[in-house]
Every structure is written in structure tokens, then in C-alpha cells.
Length: 284
Image 1: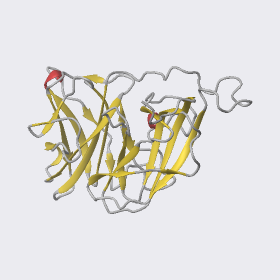
Image 2 (image 1 turned 120 degrees about the vertical axis):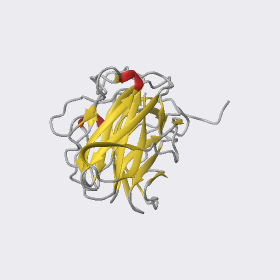
Image 3 (image 1 turned 120 degrees about the horizontal axis):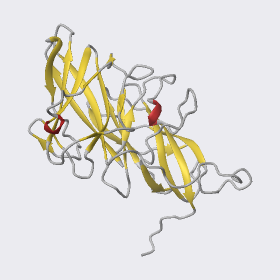
Image 4 (image 1 turned 90 degrees about the vertical axis):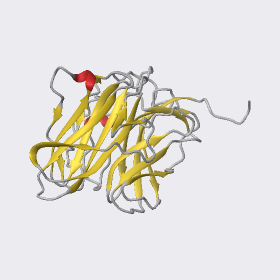
């Protein structure tokens, strides 16, 4: 399992190599704040993903006491502009996540060289370790003659028309183009689009607490990070982040979008694996 949180501040220009701290973004946060940073969770004690974006962003540095006495990791290149580049400059650490010490403070520092103050954004994901397979064969033999076979993989498209709040997480309820077949599903990848979307994360309807996510797109031809999708769109490799969450077809997760303006048209792509005919009912 994994979970996304945001760090954001307006920082003054100081050249490419003078680091300044970004404040942990606490509106709608799940993990607790500690000073100006975040307290590491005992359930998600690994740093698995870092993605920075800003008009003149240069370096992104993660800091926690348990990383010492070695140098703090400095992540480059990053995304310079108002949208993640294509392909996005992200640091996918899921195959070998960085271990952290539960309850310690985790901080993000950045540099920028704009010549004036500007707001930078960093999205970090924390995990319980390396991704685990979902436990069923994908597209097993016989699925063509019996489409409702566990292991059926497909991508479902959905839309929403929520007016987003600039500089905040806004929840959207996706409306699928076609109703999902009754049953139980694993979400194994996702994509989110709006005119100024920077990032997104899932909001499970019935648990767990964690909200896994990824970088958003602002153009239809913009690429996602390869691991964010079940299959790499360019080469078809299955180098993904495993199961994000599980849900019944009648209670899909909402999607929280972090955008920089009040967009009002959103689109989503859900990479799904059908796991079986189990359904959620109101029967105790």
C-alpha cells in the first residue's frame, strides 16, 4: 500500500544551490504534521516516489534524521513550468524505496532561480515496502471465451464536472462511460486530466485510510510516469506499483485533484483487474 502527500511554499529566489524548506501541505492531509514537515508513519515507513514542479524549480531534496550520516538525497532533474513535462521528471523509488524511521520528521527542501519569489510543489508517496503482486494471473487462458474470468485486465474511462479549488485537494466522483460489471476489482494504475491538474490521489469509499496517487496531465498527449500505469504506454512493460486499492463496482473511489485553477472538467482512466463476482450489499 502507498499514500501521497504534498509539500508547497512560496520561496524567494536564492540561486540554484541554496536550499529552502517547503511546508508540509496540511489541508486534507492524512499523515500528521511535525514542525514544518511531516511525521513518518509506522505503517508507511518508506519513501517511494518524489515529483517536483515549479516554474523555475532546480533541485528537490528529501531530509530525515535517519538518512544521516550519508548525504541527503537530492533529486534532479525536475519539472520546470506549470505542468509536468512529457515524459514527467519524477523519481520512482518503488522498486527500492528509501527506509525511514517511524515518528521522525520528514522534510522537503528546494531551490529555484527565477529572480523572484515563486511557489513550488512537491508530491511524495510513502509505502509499506516494495509493490506486491495482486495474487491472480492477468488475462489467463480462457478469458476470451469467458470475459468474467478473474484476472481480466482493462482500462475504464470516467469523467466529472466538479469546480476545483485552486491550490488544494478537491474530491471528484467519477462517472464511468460504461457501468462496471458487478464484482470486486483491484486498481493497478490510473491517469487524471484537467486543464491545470498537477497531481491526483484516490479517496477510497470504504477504506483503507491511505490515498495512493500520481502526477496529473493537462494535455491529452502528455505521458504518465511509466510505473503509474499497469503497462508502459510506450513499450508495454509491466513495471507498475502493484495494487493501489480494492473496491466493489458500486462503491468506486473518489479522485482528489490538486490543481492550480478552478477547472470544471475532469477525466480519469482506471487500470482495473477483475477479481471475482463478490458484491457489496446492505445485508449484515
